[in-house]
Amino acid sequence: MAVSFLHRERTIAAPDYSRWLIPPAALCVHLCIGQAYAFSVFNLPMTKLIGITQSAPEDWKLTELGWIFSLAIFFLGASAAVLGRWVEEGGPRRAMFTAGLCWAGGFFLSAIGVYLHELWIIYLGYGVVGGIGLGIGYISPVSTLIRWFPDRPGMATGMAIMGFGGGAFIASPLSVWLMSRFSTPTHIGVAETFIVMGLIYLCFMMVGAAIVRVPPPGWAPANYTPPAQPKPLVTNQNVFVYDALKTPQFWLIWWILCLNVTAGIGVLGQASAMSQEMFRGRITAVAASGFVGLFSLFNMMGRIFWSSTSDYIGRKNTYFIFFALGAVLYALVPYTGAIGSIGLFVFCYAVIFSMYGGGFATVPAYLRDMFGTRYVGAIHGLLLTAWSMAGIFGPVLVNYIREYNVTHGVAAAQAYNVTMYVMAGLLIIGFVCNLFVRSVHERFHMRAVEADAEVEAAPVFGSR
Image 1 (spheres, helix red, strand yellow):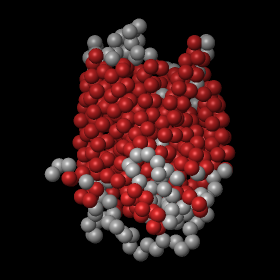
Image 2 (tube, rainbow, N blue to C red):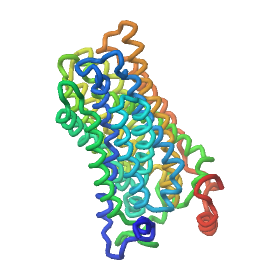
Image 3 (cartoon, helix red, strand yellow):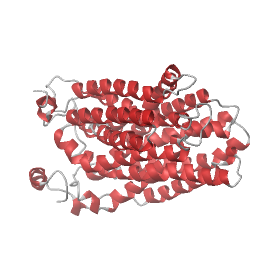
Image 4 (spheres, rainbow, N blue to C red):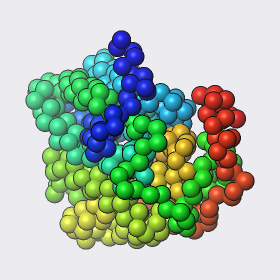
């Protein structure tokens, strides 16, 4: 009976069901897994688990801890790519339920790793098991919301994904508060914090799984009529999930996402430590956690603002703004440190992270415009491998360029300058990729009869 509750047919909405009940279900999941963006608040405390007040020789280094976040993002993309068809065919409830178990399980395993002081257990827990929960949870509500909101696909994906950006707004101060409650003069309460947060997230994600619904066949919003003539760069045809991989559009958008995420994710993963080092003595750990929370708020609001804006100005134009304005702001960050302007530093990153989040929320609608609605969830899962790669490239660039600079005598306050210029260059490359995006050639479109045959014949994994 419990297993049948997870079946897709048990989630089909009744005729009078309101589509506005779906966004809260998505938020229950995404606000939880969005904690990943606040993981940086654990980095400095976890370099002092043995030394307590300062790092001991046996303590972990910041570069070693940076791989936890990178692994989690890598397995987010990998699991979304591999399990995208499984999520589509099984429905959002089964996916959300599975994501909740993996995400909470990752915290519990990580608590054991902290207690035993075994870093590989944390890599396995938060990085691998938690990362799989991230991937499944991330894509589970996206295609569902697009189907509930065919009239506003950009806004729909923004609602689905805004919670992921806002999760750190809650998790960052919560993590600091819990560690302070569990800490003693001889112990830093990281392990206990992991356990409590795992339990909280498990409960909320199960609520999301219970209330989510899919629209019945043939459903459409009241008074909605599909446009007879689609807008430029928007198709009313569908492309089979694995045929999308054969198109240049998929790979251009892959690089667009990868470059946009690489530029933001490494900085976001080290936002707490970076702000403290660039403004040493002026920004405390508590203030830094507040900045992380503030940035996550802009990350969250940017997802709904930019994705909704893209419904009016188009996805391609929206990404042009991301890349052009983002390159300028990244190049400006070293100047904010040089003049000691915390306000200008915060402003630059607030706008950067609003566009970083907006890029995530806009890309499913970009895919929907290019490849249609039928397989948008599975195609989105495949595209998230770009996030996996960026989850490695970004933190590695930030951490190791900083480490190189510090070991060669560069002051900590200037250790991130070269990285900022590199990130600006990546965004310029992304601008060029976006420039070459065109409509998908009609030879990749599915005919109606062929589409029905593919649904019956195509395996869950593999190619056509």
